[in-house]
Length: 215
Ligand SMILES: Nc1ncnc2c1ncn2[C@@H]1O[C@H](COP(=O)(O)OP(=O)(O)OP(=O)(O)O)[C@@H](O)[C@H]1O
Image (cartoon, rainbow, N blue to C red; front, side):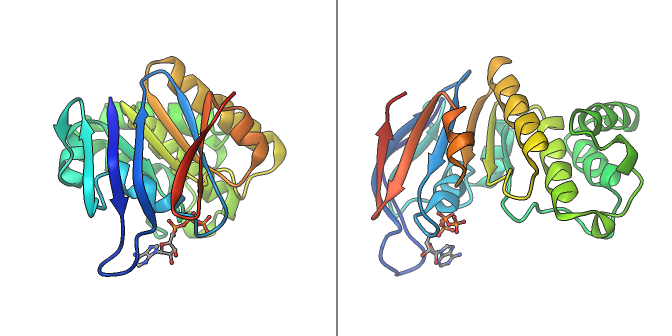
């Protein structure tokens, strides 16, 4: 269970982006994080990913303080970043394999899980293409495939449908729902009302505050 308690999130000495946020990201649930541009969606996901320590309040995973990204990785917290975070001069499949091998897969396991994840995103035909040669939407789907291949306990997806056509957006939402069904806690930051509506719950960020919206 990943929990923020009374967390104030800020960069350096600047005014807080979000104040006194309390929320729990529950296994088996898909949570939407919504709000206008600049409201703090990426900031919230950064705190949940162990990348940004709260100025006050706490972030805990299974009751233990989440001090840093290393701790988050050890707890299986996977982030699919807004800018996709892919290495442009590696192929789509290399981007997945490198990360899987770094997490302890054998090369054969990494090849197998890479192929499965790329196929789920409809990218089998792009496996050998350099990321820099892929379209924006294909790159976004490659980043999602990499996130899914890691099979995390917590999956934080930051605006991962922004460059997708309707069919692929639906596919991705169904995959995220599938991740929740297998028991992962899934968080989707999104501007898209349809994507938010497909989630089990929604937290809306506005004017530095987080508000839960019912379903
Ligand atoms: N690394 C940083 N250093 C300083 N300020 C930052 C940093 N990252 C974000 N901010 C500021 O924090 C605020 C929230 O930004 P954030 O990226 O979390 O919003 P967002 O809701 O994800 O926006 P968008 O929908 O446009 O992606 C903005 O005012 C932004 O300028």
